[in-house]
Image 1 (cartoon, rainbow, N blue to C red):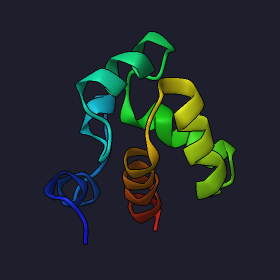
Image 2: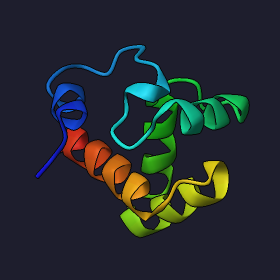
Image 3: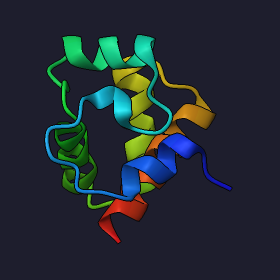
Image 4: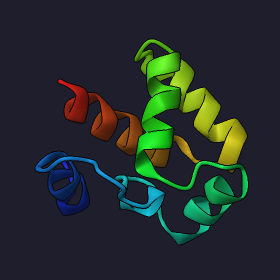
Length: 85
């Protein structure tokens, strides 16, 4: 089952939502992503699309980029996948 954060995110257009609105991305990971230029949810979505929606590659990228653990990266990739569908 998905979190409230996930349901809230996929329920509406992405617009200019900050990166921290993505499921699995809290304050710490959000700051790390912002420092690397991924300040908005749509910028992270762009990376997901560049990786051709390959969730395994995306989770690996998230781990390397901001230190996301397995659950965090799974939550984030699932959130983006559902938003795209």
